[in-house]
Length: 343
Image (cartoon, rainbow, N blue to C red; front, side, top):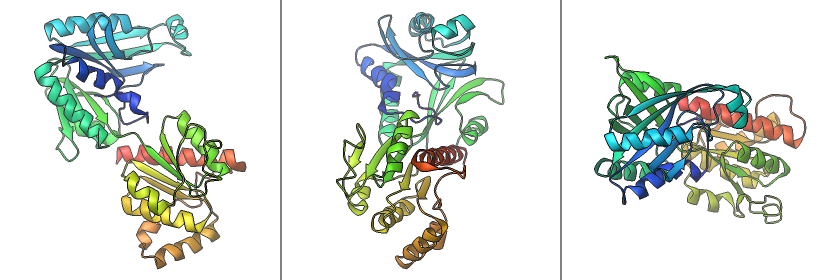
């Protein structure tokens, strides 16, 4: 039940609707959560996008970029009053789409369900706690009754929900009895650690920001790891052995080693491989990587773990120059993340 649905990396703003809903439940008996359950054609907000509503002037988040928000708020107030969920379908005309900054029209299906104080406070507390711990979960909402169920990692899912999870997509799903449920995947946003504050890293960090991925730059060389070179980025001017343990790398993290300095890159690679990150790549030619394999093996890293390193780094697009190499790395990270969601 957050705007992050396992298909887009976002910063903490993807939790704004849920945080607001939790806060309002201390003041109101109930709130409504509107979720984008399906889209066709252009849509300014992807499936899983959400808006919380507590009153006609108390709402947070977005389900359409503005073109149907007023209608959703009116319907949400009715859902709060009656407890009966609503599944709304909106067609967005080409004219309205252009007003919203879209290239063409489409349609949006929005599910609105009520959360009462008794039900919503424990649910949102647990859900926000899972998100804070970067733990994945699945929220399933019955479109007819509004019943909401939370599944944690390792919980058994019904077959129709497991199918959505296997595809890595939040979606409307049909139950065996013909009922319909909205299956909402909540996976932590990908967090990319870039080791080596090089020219390639500068381009890559800019691109990672554009796609909404969290990024941290690690390099002990303070002349490289400076705010002047990485304005607005999170920078740790530390050796990987000092910086990475505190970052607590997890399966939703990725590590990119582009310092081209074995003393820096090798330590980072050992940490990443032991943490089970979803992607680990290292800059260097095949010849350099062969030598890297020998060094890592001598330090105790298993051949199977070393095989996980993408080297030479990036998709083979015939890249020339730092910017194109960065683009190839970004594409490879995105592909690896999508594949993880479908695993």
